[in-house]
Amino acid sequence: MKTVTARQMREIESAEFDLHHFSDDVFISAAARKLKESINELPQGKVLFLCGNNRNGDCGLLAASLLLRDSDRKIQAAISENDSVYHEHALGQNLEILSVQRLVRQAVNDADIIVDCIYGYDLDEEVSYPYSYWIEWVNSSKAHVVSLDVPSGLNSDNGSVMGSCIRADETLAIQLPKIGCYLYPGSSLCGKLSVADIGISSEAISESDCECRISTYEEMKTALPSRFKHSHKGTYGKVLLIAGSQGKSGACLLSAKALMKCGAGLLTVMSVKDVTDVVKNNLFEAMTITIEEGNAEGYLNGIDFNDYTLIVLGPGLGRGLQTEGILKKVLNSDLPVVIDADGLYYLKNNLEMVRNRKTLTVITPHIVEYQRIFEYRENTIIEDLKKISLEYPGLITVLKSEHTIIAHEGKICINVTGNNALAKGGSGDVLCGVIGGLFAQRSDAAAVEAAVYVHSLAADRWCEAHSSYSLLASDLIEMIDEILFEMTRG
Image (cartoon, rainbow, N blue to C red; front, side):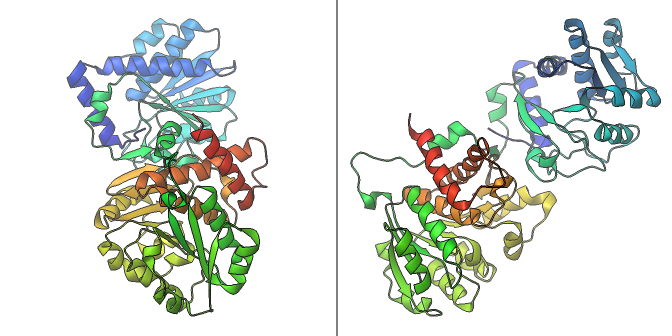
């Protein structure tokens, strides 16, 4: 599913107007009906529509009128100005309209459901009076809050707050979700996000230059690598995992198990004796190469990379100087590479090698690791990732956050599965293994997107029957098996 900026949404609407004479009144009417239907699904109670002096406000007034006609709820609407073309219509429906601020505040306090139609997706300045007060009152109320399109006060392009912002329990996006709803802090202000199709044609949407999309279940099912009847272990990739160090055997083992659980055909783990002993005793399917502490480069000199199809580097490797030497040798190879955790520590010094590689390089930084490699600017992260992915054509960046962002060749995929159960040591090592396992079978960005989706969806499935407190990285690997079974059985 595409997700759009304010400019792109305006262009899509304009294209629809030109293609099918889709007028503003039709847009407002369709959005109002969808909003009314959404409110009808909520429990009974007093409903207050907060309507700005704009198209979102028009949608709110019309939705309130429609709801009043078909419902026995107590319904009110608050406005700051009465120049909306729907104002007279609303009065004709005997809708109670409030404009005195004292009465608006009382209505906010009394409401069971508040429908936020103050601002739309195209807000480009800080929230002004009286709406700043309305937002403050709403956020202090106990009502269930529904925002139309985006929570009022949210920058729909980058997720920043324009002075103040509604904290919604749910947001009903019109036609397409807006990018800012998936970027922090916007992602924490939208509540449950759903999308209302108001009939804009796929033709108009396809004409837009949208390069950002949201991963969906059906799309990710098709992105999973295929398994063939006539195949063998070599068909599904031969992986060299360089990971682990003294006291960090767990990171290596978790990655190794996830790699094999996700279908890699052959796995060789290269690490120090303490780590390879753990692997030998806990993952019988993996082969090992034991190296002396501090002499990994020497062992790599004797490795024939032609024996492998993928290198995965980093989990638990440590940040000693030998790590940079390993990184350089790996980047100098002709193999696709996945770089995670400690493998990222020296990447900034070697970006030119990444730029010049002929094969794909996948990096999996969290925000702090990303800041060591590139400049991190919260409000322009999508544009920055697009630019970086064009500057480094073979680079696939997996920026781990509340909603993980995958960037490659100017295109952005935002993963919306996952939850705070993943905020625990070892989760990232498992993700590295899942990426490695699927990427070994199909060396493209789609396999990486599928890996991120499967990993996060496993955490969502865990929380359907267990506490988010209790998820262990080892549990996650077992849940991933269930997700892959579910997604590939038909």
